Length: 230
Image 1 (cartoon, rainbow, N blue to C red):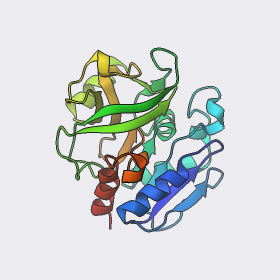
Image 2: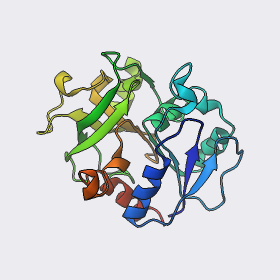
Image 3: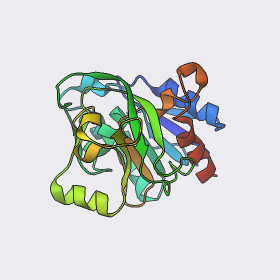
Image 4: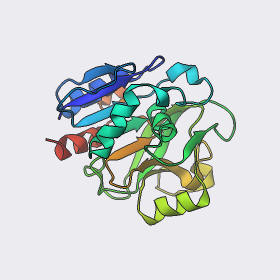
């Protein structure tokens, strides 16, 4: 599996992503600066990691979504390439139109940094095959703008097409307003594209891939990708 990790001014989770890929058994990724206009040949996966691109100026991800490299990412996705956006990467994917909806300010207008419960909704995507349906994970979040919102028609389409990959829940897998850390509609924590080859999610699976980090609930996501890609 050949992966590229995009770098924007303010990106700060690229090394965590690279380590997660290494732990899963993937070759070392390449890093691509946002001013580039093309992606390296032979890629299987493009990752947009977390951070605070452009200091979250204007809206989180809004400026990064207009970086030159995003046109190459759009072409890559249109041709069936795999794309993973985590936290700020998810925000960039929505701002760029690669995923529907938007990430708004958290309901309580506070930055959230803690572990949350996450229920696996789909196991038929290349990102989730190593999870059991309904599995409950504990995964850290670290965001101020993680409140997923979409209009009613978009939300109904996501639900009807089975494109919600993860939801916020409690330790027993129960989804409720009380288990929603940021106000996201439908407790949505992650969604996939129509072809299920683009995933955006707010929690950070790359930060739970080794026991030394406090757990390995995030590792199966990267193992799923390794299994799905040549």
